[in-house]
Image 1: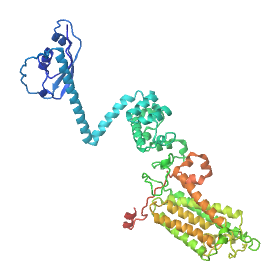
Image 2 (image 1 turned 30 degrees about the vertical axis):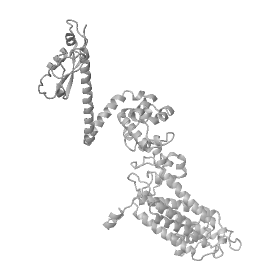
Image 3 (image 1 turned 60 degrees about the vertical axis):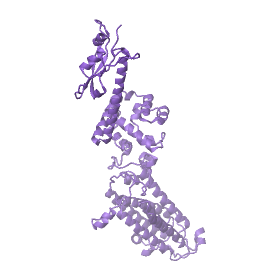
Image 4 (image 1 turned 180 degrees about the vertical axis):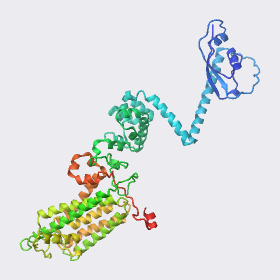
Length: 554
């Protein structure tokens, strides 16, 4: 009967022969040094050791260990008398026990080596860590490259479990049936927005990191499907990929500045830039030529409004025939003669505050362009409302009578006087008939909203002062009996709604998603097509000197 010699480490040829012949242990604890495993066929040797003489024994893999440094010879242990329960050294049972002990020693050594490698990686330099990460990516590539196109929902579920996302297996695989290719094209926007709407920010980021590693391994698959792999691997991938669609055309061309954060796609990005949220630093094109066009636009509208005011003054109803209309506020509050002058004082203070903010703001060109476009649009609407319907004077103190101007030149001269005096009584301008709606309320409210929008939210004193000036200015208009209450209310409502609609569209880029918005707001689309997202509240000193102010504000 033949017995087989099991595989076990042999330190040297002499030890190897001793182990095969069963004369003693293959090594001693002193000889347990790092070694190199070499496979050797041991069929005939095993057969000879078992007593077989011609038939070749079965192929058994032996592990020959080559010591890294020659170990000093050790004297063989003294022979001990065999006990009644002890087996001979060359017996199969003894060999199995020896091989088992040696395999356990090898496992312990391997574990120690792995722990040492991990400690080295923790304390190693970034280059070493990157190399180990590269090896891990290569392993992932070799594992997934062949089957990513054939991944089913079950494979995706296994991948999610391997990455530690057990709780998202049901929603991603069972409910929404994500396979390998759809998993490869998943973006952070998909995770945040419906129908997934993952609420845990840490899970979103960790899952996106795992998906980006997968995308990096399978860049060729992405390119075959028509995706730009560079955009998927960049941190801005869910936003930059949107720019590749045809809807992101501006004046027939792509936007000039696309390196900023685009805030149109998810609810977390719908943020007003009021100094509360920090945004990524980006370059916003000032587009001075558009700012100049907006200034020309608002000056033309002011001139047209002045000419309409002259025509309305000619058509003012007679006070004897058409007395003032009933008004709850005007009938309840007595007239204050100096109140209207105080309204204009509040407006002047707000104007100076806004000019200071505009001067120090880094993106002053965009702010001025928005102010001019909004102010011009509201006053253009005011031209139609006061021209269509002429209201009677709101108070008996107003000495308004229809003035007739002989020719067009006299009307233009009067319009120029109103335009150059900004329609203010402080500059000697007095008009009648321009009641629906209040121009003073429009200016006060618009300046207040621009000051509060483009200054940090932590500037509570400035925001409170701005609102106090706005509200007191409106009160003084009514206290002076210069406008009906409905004039002030409609002016405030139109101004605030138009401001909020404009900035909501500008901050969320929603107009790019709708062709109807482009049709209804063509001027907005023209002025805002290259402003990507909210305008950050950044300040700088606009002049080269003095250096102290430049360092302090910049």
